[in-house]
Image 1 (cartoon, rainbow, N blue to C red):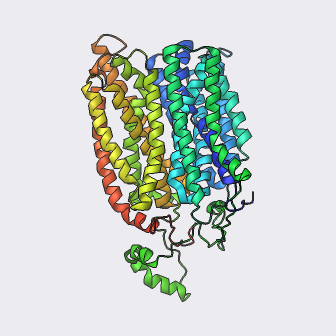
Image 2 (cartoon, rainbow, N blue to C red):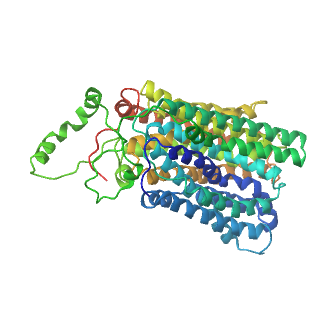
Image 3 (tube, rainbow, N blue to C red):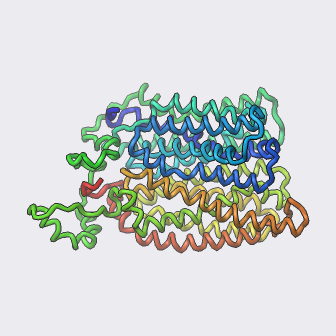
Length: 564
């Protein structure tokens, strides 16, 4: 598909369409809605259901194949694969829960759940990689917006489940089987590579601000309607009205290309476009493609100070290459485009992965066990608790991107410093959980939700800035492995074992009291303490990279070495 004109409407059309695809990519959050029916219909015990939850996390986060495909296939093809996985996986689960087909083997349902939630990886990778390349100068903002809408997807599905589907698990699974693929096929035309704008656009900030404000309003609205549904049990007509208003909020980002169509700007930029984002995925054979995605900074002082020490040992090599004596490509430097195998052996790569793993692994442990934690603390209805975590998770994802973008442009402050701050808060939060003090449950859950969301919105742009956008898809999806590995270690093994041990001491299958998760919370606090130390080390190591990339207050890419 040929690239589109720089500064044209399609990038914003694609971002508006991406909002809906990101909601679809959050389908893995539906597991708590249909898992009770799956447990009762199939006669599973809690351990079997927990392992299905692990399958849910594995499918959702193991995205190496989508990452590789994002460099080989156009976005519509990646979306199509995700839609097919959604249809096949949830179709099998619907057959089981609706009892259309009875006595399906456990392993079949386990694999079906992996396939179903693996659609999240395909859909999320397609829209995130494409939009990061379409808006390369605003990576943190774009990542925060898109990751924020995934965080809101749980509340969106809950609203649909309660109002439209009458709290029917079989109807929900049928909706996921048919509705989400139809949505993806309808929108795939609009998710495509476009030519990024050639420079900073004064109107772009306003457009992003509008999109962020619309998402915040949607989040507040969903939290409010959840409380209303839980406390007042509104009529079907009012519930359907709630859903209709929610759809209007989801359509708000499309107002930007509509405004650009009705009121086109009179100011025309004379700067040449920086090149299509398609060029980021060109094959190695295009040796004539030497123009970088972004124009290098004109500040020779800033670039020189960064590269002077790092490139000094290469002077003789460069002179020899210039004289034609030898031909050798140097290895990429941080901030340039890395192949996955080149990034894989870098210390910064593993530091970022470990910090992310410790942050999201501990957070997802609480998320997966939040209902049981609420019951243990004496909360009979955990719906509001789950909605509070979802809303604060969204706030963390959105404002993590916004705040880090502001400080990286004004202070060249590495984004990872916000992972440091958030994990310090997580240490305090887990200690509050462990203390089981009266009145701290909701405050702890809100703080944890925010800090959990920050991990996502910081990791995404940071990985692209350190290792480039060309192979970002596979690098990003490898980073996401921290989520299921953390869920398996901290939730499946640690939290599950401690909970069952304490429940056995109470001679019940349900554990009550602060001791049910106390040891788990203390271990998680220690994990985040380690994550804090590692994130400080990472921040110190990559500070020179950010001083180079954001010299002058806007993103600049160093001259690339023709590496593929």
